[in-house]
Image 1 (cartoon, one colour):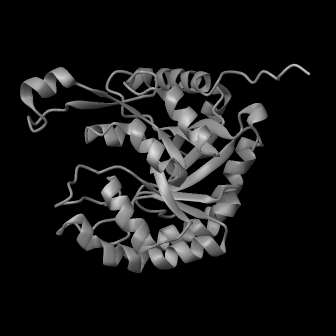
Image 2: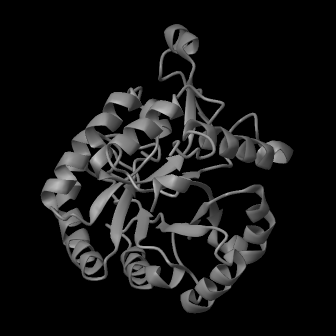
Amino acid sequence: MSRLDHSDIRIGTLIQADAGASYLAQILPHGFESFEITFGGAIGPIVLEDYAREIRETLCDRAGISCLGLYGNPLTDPQAAQDLARLIDSAHLFGCSLVCGFAGALEDRPVDQSLPRFAEVFGPLARRAEDRGVRIAFENCDMGGTWEHPRWNIAHSPRAWRMMFEAVPSPALGLEWEPCHQMVSLIDPIPQLREWASRVFHVHGKDATILHDKIRRDGIRCGEHVVLHRTPGFGDSNWTEIISILRAAGFKGSIDIEGWHDPVYCGDLEMTGQVRALEYLKACRGGPFVPNPA
């Protein structure tokens, strides 16, 4: 990947696997450079070999697949763990070497009590990934859970990350990071990213707007949203600084926009918001490449 054409950091978007190549063909002309294919909680009836061939024929080298995503609970659902293994084995068919998803959770106990089960599941998966030249990245979404009562995913705080990477000390394990999920916990994402950039393998392009006035008036337990999920360019984050931190740390990969969450640019305005985010993130990346004078 070269900085000469910005291919060290590509800007793309997420697509649902069941939307298929026809959806991909419709949005490809907008200028997305990469795509995360997400299979939801399970691969289901999709034949990965056939599906990968269809996707790559549609892309025709105009963009790449950044990663494959599976967001089940592999600590309690054996099928989710098996599907992660299948994606690790099949990533090369899509021309990628990254599988993303949730770390899972034992939902009836605190995060730290999930660690033995995490090591039992992800120890073998990490070795499998290492053997195949694949990496695994955990999304930092809390799924509405807490430390005492996690839901689906323990990988939602730096304290948990330290425990996870100590429990399974594999270079194949890292983070699928986004500022939004940290801002929901009122964490400042910028100093966090400076600390953790070397473990960030993939970035979800999703931002947030923190309603500080509402928090001061009603608090964070008022039963209403006090942090809104936003498409990049419409939220509070400084993506120029985010990309600068990633580049300074040697990040090479993709920022893929996670759409379908913005409360304003939704419905008929969904793709309007996503394409605006694409243009915005490309500008934050530095705009069109300009060669230095000879």
